[in-house]
Image 1 (tube, rainbow, N blue to C red):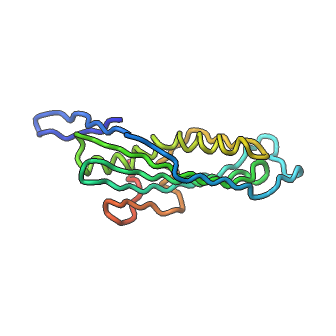
Image 2: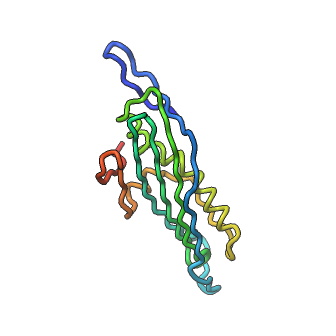
Image 3: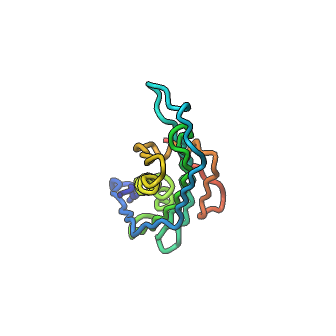
Length: 167
């Protein structure tokens, strides 16, 4: 994944490479929170309602490495998939070229989108063994979910709350 790097005023910006060194899932919880009542079916023409909430925490180190913790809580439709799933994924990122500011921006704005497919897969995998079948999360605009999530977002580089910037 590349992010623009500033050069001198006479030179055009060139991409600064940021690499995902590794990722892992330190926490995965899956709870069936109820039973499905056959009379509470999803009406024809209506789709299942799955709620997805996310938070992101970013820590950028002086050695141009960063750790991103993306936490997602998925609550299935109580009429069809009464599940509550929480997944945390950690992504480790490194760069030789980007400034710490660029790396921090990358980790807040781009890294959650790179990590989310691994959360989608984990939710699908763990719920496939559930009594009511898997929750299949569609691809989604991760930034939009983070922007409206009721959970706080913490940026450890400033130790203040940080929301992804508009644009």
